[in-house]
Length: 476
Image 1 (tube, one colour):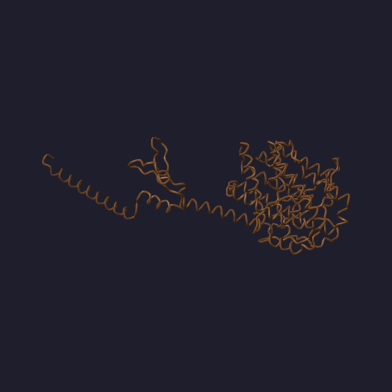
Image 2 (cartoon, helix red, strand yellow; image 1 turned 30 degrees about the vertical axis):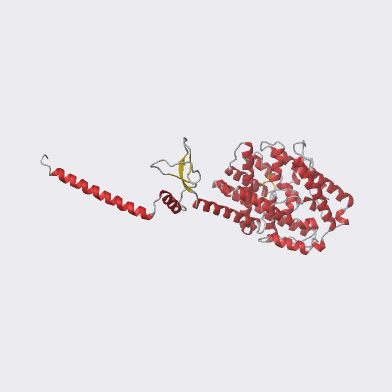
């Protein structure tokens, strides 16, 4: 949660809030038994782009405490407004029963989107790994503009932060591979992430890295108290997000809503199929809509299902939504007791996540993927295969004749198969294919039509002559 708060351009404490309130709410309303909700890299990155557009980060962090607090309040106000509007959109979609829209995000789109999204998240965190303080680029081609800024400022790299980043990666990546390769032998996976955080925090505290080497650390994280009367005020008091930003964030929020819902439903469906139960897309709209709407009043940014924690939850043996209660309790302990211990945690230690779209911005890249996928479906249905079926010897099995030479046609019958739906978009193609396979060329059709009319005319004349002959019969 704290790591993804960096992607959202807000303070780490708001990542903890977003890892608590939405999880509890989804547990009450969601249908995905193995789904873990909270902060998600792609949604956080897209929300951070909106925050940076409206409240840009100052390059020089030398403002007074009051000015810094005001800036942070404005930024979380925008982020929580995005969450509120996203929740309202989902609730409206639920009332209109639009859960079927998730079907337009096919599996190839979701996989391409989530894998390509890695580059945006990775590049966005390069400046933290190198100890650079650069403006955040948003919009189309932001990936390349960010890379250009990083390359241009490489001479100003903070070597201490770079060394810490490389050491963390050298520990995290191999241990993660060990957990995957030897997961059957290991009773429990090695908790390398939490160990890295603990060790890095201890080293930073003992050696005063923030003052001696100008390393940026997390800073103050407020904590609660064990006494209930003093515990309650420590939680964020409910307050209305910045509603005046709705006109400015509406377009981006629609994209964030669609991405968050699509990823959440896709993830829920994957685990539902794996464990033999079903989910209800419209109920998922309600669950995520309530989660985002209510949590926005507690200074939370948009949430969705998260891939990493869902994998952990499933591998740990979670089978119902109640497992989210345990997750919420862990975050609650962090909020109440452990939060201040993260004060000296170096920010570059959090560079662990990859996900987002390469050339264009995340929302535009996803839109292009959806449109392209729909166009391929339309093209396939417009030109679906049509063939004549033949019967295999001594069986009741029918196969296309052009692919199975040992099959034969039933005498006097033509059996056609069309591998797609028939609708107005492919009616002409279907008619042409049917005519071709049946040998119904325009010339033959015209000649048969003439023959039919001539036959009807002759039959009509024969009938008339017969009637006239009978009327002249003397016996009548």
